[in-house]
Length: 422
Image (cartoon, rainbow, N blue to C red):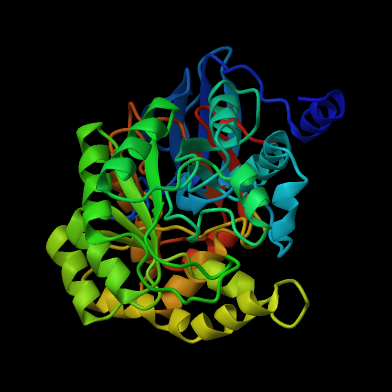
C-alpha cells in the first residue's frame, strides 16, 4: 500500500483502548433478548470482552473497575446486519473499478466500519468485496486496530461469466483484467471456485443467482446459474463447513437457489408463491435489504446511474414495497440485512422502519437483527443476546425498542467485544 494510502487509513482509524480488566455498566433498563420483557435498573459486569454477570439494581463497582453510567438508557444486545459492503460507498461510477486500487477499499472500509459500529451494529456480514479488502478489515476490527464491528466476510462473489458480480461495462480486454477470478461455468468449475474461496479465507460463500439492478446489463433480473451449478455450489460449501448467501431477485432464481440448499436469499424482490413454498420447505432465510431499494430510488433522476441501471431501479421500486410482507405473512424466516454501501453507511437502522411498514412488529424486527441473525451465522451462543459468557456487544438507546424499534435509529453508546466505540 502506498504511503498516502497508509496516511488515509490512519486518519480513518479511531483509537480503541486495550480491554479494561473490568467494566461495570449501570443501566436504567435492560433488554436481554427480543423475546423477553425489559428488566429494570441493572448492573452489567464485563471482563476481558465478555459479559460476566447481569444483576438487578445499581450495584457498587469493585475497586479499579471502569464504570459506565447509562441509568437513563435502555441497554440491549448489539445489532447484526447480514448484508453490508463496507469497502464501497454509494454512487453510479462503475468505471472507478478501472482506476481505484483494491487498497483503497480498505481505506473506505475503515471509515465505514466505524460508522456502522456507531450506528449500533456490532456484527456484520460483509456480502462481497475484493479478494483481500474485506478480510483485512475483518482482522483489523478483531485485533482492535480499526474501530468497527465483528466482520463475517464472504470476499468476491461467485457469478456466471458476464453476469451480475462479474466485471462488465468495459472493453473485453479490460473486463478480463479486472475480473475477480470467481466467475464459473458448469458444476465442476463452480465447485472449484467455492474451494478457492474457502482456501482464500471466506467465512461464507456469496453467489449472484440472478441478474442485478446495479450491473451494467439490461437483460433483466432472472436466474443466472443453472440448478446443477447452484446444487454444486451449495453441496461443496456445506462439505467445507461453509454456508451460502445468494443475491436473487427473480422468482425462479429464488426458487432454484432454495431447492439447491442455498442458506439465505438476499433481496428476494419478485418472490411468488412457488418461491415462497420452496423457501419454507427448505428452511431458506430471507434477508430483504429494503434500505437498498430506498437508497437507489433516492438517486433516481440525479444522473447517478447509467440509463440501463436507472430503468431497472424504476422497475423494482413498486415490488420492493410489498415482497417482504408476502414472505412474512407466509411464515418465511426473515433476518435483518440492509445492503449498506448501496446507500450511505450508518443509516442501517432505518431498515427497521421499512420492515415494520410491511407487517413486522417492533419485537419481530429487533429479533431479526439479534437472535435470528445470530442463528443464521451459527453464533447464537456468542452474540444476539445479553447473558453471562456472551461477547460484550452492547448498545444503549433512549426508549423501549420492543415497543418502537425506530428508537434504534439513534444509538447513544456502543461496545464491541468489550471495547467502547468512541
